[in-house]
Amino acid sequence: MRGVDSGLAFIFPGQGSQSVGMLAELAQSHGSVAETFAEASETLGYELWDLVCNGPEERLNATRQTQPAMLAAGVAAWRVWCRETDVRPAWLAGHSLGEYTALVCAGVLEFRDGIRLVAERARLMQEAVPEHVGAMAAVLGLDDAQVLTVCEQASHDGERVTAANFNAPGQVVIAGHREAVARATELAKAAGAKRAVILPVSVPSHCPLMQPAADAFRGILAAIPLRLPALPVIHNVDVAAHAEPEAMREALTQQLCGSVRWVETIRHMAAQGVDRFVECGPGRVLAGLNKRIVGDARTEALFDTSSLLKAKGLLA
Image: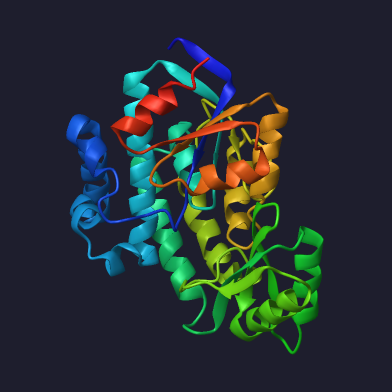
């Protein structure tokens, strides 16, 4: 390995970046993409690559299929990078589900263990909250303190809403009981939000309603071997890199109920000297957020041959 580029970080997207046909073009010139999905399919017991290539979209967008598909896609893109260049990033991080992709790429988790873990995570998340009980909403145009105040005001009568994702300045996702989320969106609009809209999701992620999933997931995590990271991974819940397996298990457990502190994560890496980011996996969601978080940093995606060339152009 030529070495680590101290100004380079890789970030991995989560749910919402998936699409039918993702990575198909990259797979035409890199056999490791299909090989990665074949390994995932063997682990899951169903044909994941066919689902990714051909859909149906409704099944790919179902949480239980989305999470393994996005993990496999991010790892496949990383493996292409590792075959194309011997330069490695100084830092890794992933948004929500993407944190598991980062941990696989850092050597903390075996790929097959990662696939099993996110499949179980998806199952537990789906089962934790009955249908129509929870909801999530995006609030645009308020600062973090205003969103937190709105959530506090909207939480009463046993119904609670909290900040789930701090995605970018002026862009926060909230989650909790459906009625509390609805109240919060109206309060946000009254407080001057540009938009406050309920999101079309089936699971209220990163909020206290996920506590039953976290409790069950803790036991599953305990049985999965974790190794020392070859590259540091910044965790969502505490914006810290951990080396001890128990600390990593705790961060992953708490992530189910805790906020994704993405703005702090990106700024932390920038403070360590990172000025270039590669969004490794489908889409450009994180690249868009980066423009608002660290506008002077360069971010390229990596999901097809053209974007791979642009990503390689970031190398110092």
